[in-house]
Length: 428
Image (cartoon, rainbow, N blue to C red; front, side, top):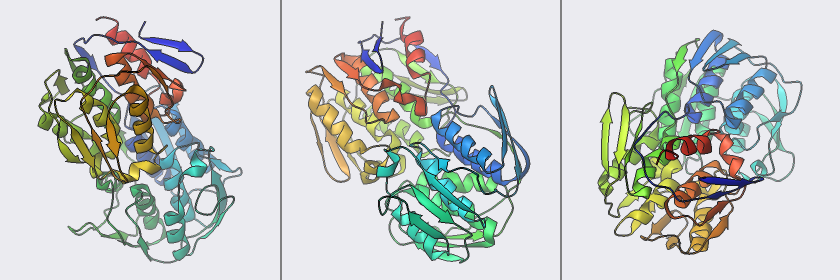
């Protein structure tokens, strides 16, 4: 038995490698963008192979509350929009889904409606002040219902101004939400007042908008966004596999030191910046092969690297774990913004490494990881963060000694994670 459950706590037992072929769930980042744009389009859109998870269910719930018809049947979802969103009759609940909070707030603000929006206690710790400041400049009335700078919010639209400056160094999701909103109010201009983090996610948003018929003009400097007036047009979409979820499978043979894994529904040319992990692993010495039927990673001898992960920050924790198998230290920079994800991911990983007797040093936006094995068994708290739990599982499968509190938090993006590992590694 690889995973020994006691309530919500799971003890992870070590395993051996096995050659495996897997298909990961659809991309959360893409699914929620496609859902939002399909909900704003007039007519019926179809999403094939979307992600069914807590975060996407929260997005569908919000859109339904705003008058969008959504049917989620097996692997094909139909979304019927009217080109507008109506005022919800109930407070909008977004759980701890950052994409939902940060996309819905500006998009709904484009319409002459009032709404309240909030989530879990954890969401109430995730800053949103930069987005609120921008919305106020655009003429939206926004009030904090509890703590200044944090959800929940009371909001009354519509957006009236056409130009705004926005900080880019905290979260790219604020920018993505505003980009999707501005075509609905006649277009406008967004100018970044600081360096943008997670540029790849904004590029993803722009590509999704273009697919739905709105083309944003951006200079090479990627610091000014000229958004035209426009209407989103219904589409048929095939959702790529989630690159962040694939990262744990890419890491599996490297952690276990044997065999290989092929992920069939992710590709190098994906709009997902987290696919950049493949190049980092190759730089470390991993045997990586990209082909028409997916990407294969084979167990390999690794060396440490120095890498800036600004554009692929969701897989930085995965690399922290994989770096323990390298022959020399690995330094990861450009990841300060992962401190305001579902949890402070740098602090949570640092605490876990300390508990397990693994060596890591960390600063405001960097970590350094030394080679090592788990020395001290420990119960690790993922802080309700799905990505932390999946990283901890990799460590446990390689070395043992890992028990994860609230192991079911992976349901946020990968509800079948433990079952798939059990099915595949059970053959070893």
